[in-house]
Length: 226
Length: 239
Image (cartoon, rainbow over all chains, first blue to last red; front, side, top):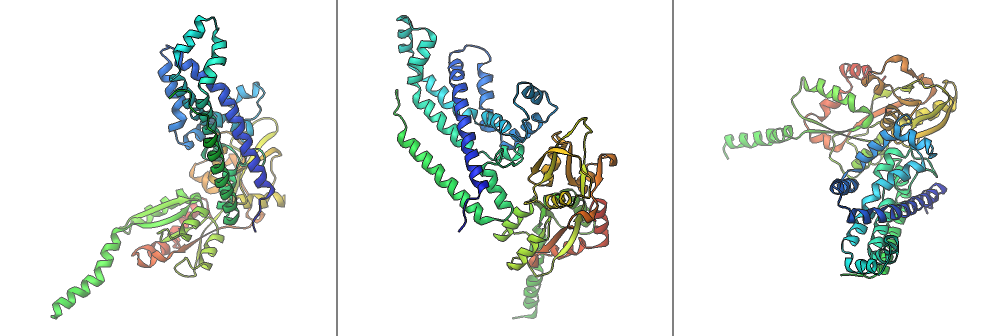
């Protein structure tokens, strides 16, 4: 009987930690960003929307390659991160986190942006007439109205980060407890011909992913507007 | 039946398969550390033979898995001997003979001399890559003088070892001599690890069942063992 090794448990814990952190941070970044993108008349709106959607289209190898170059110790990007106290980016959890934030951004941004597009502007105007300030309106009206969008964004962001592989393979360095995620661990088992262990961990991933998605769609809040 | 028809039938039986097979390219599965050298060998072989050779590059483990599941290669050039022997044991090869076509040499590359302590040493994962295993054995043996690095990072394979070092992530990296040769890295930047520091990185090749029906599979396999091929392989940084 094959069992999970300590390295497996570590990889499982690390993967969920990364997915949770990415989802949390992206929700905080994407909600105001989507709100601004919806309201703005700036000429940069189009290019920005295209820019934020790029990770949807680009192969992970392209992202991974650019991250690998950007994370090298002597680049301005790494120097800036070092100056801000993030430490070394390549082969570290922080580096993976930054890469995953960019990699999963469109998966969180798009649903929130779409939900905001169908916002009922009438109620917002009414609230403004009744004296509610912009922040007040954002938190008491916008947020509750886009709940389904937030929910979908969070699920997609989490799931997409769980399934991350290509980028991690290129910038991770496969360090247990730091950058060795489940997907990379499975890859390592397959490459070292330990098919039994690979099966076990893959099966676990399959079942857990299915259960998460199933629960999530079951619990999904009903739409405010149709 | 007239003798003429018989001779036509014999002709078709004898020649048709040959004609048909000369159209299909020779599919060779090659471990990715041998990409550069395999191209040189192919060019040399095609000087005298008109056929098509198609290389498929991947890690030996991926190619092994593909062959195990019936991938239509005629020849397998592995980065180690282990996987070839495993295929033979599982009856996935044409016969039980295999041949060491190249022996890899490990080198320590220090792309840029930075001041201060060595931060990152890169090596291929010893669990996955023959060059990684050799690097690990070299470190354990302790005879080869290494810089004192703060952190050791495992790359997936020797190519990634190279990429990490080439993109400025490493102060020192274990790479293959063949990579240094093909990229024309100046000699002062690297040291060859003496071969007695680790087990030989013996790269084996083997004929697969599909080779039986291909006109040029055995020719190419023989060519890879010829003196001409050996010279090319040696020049590319192998033994």
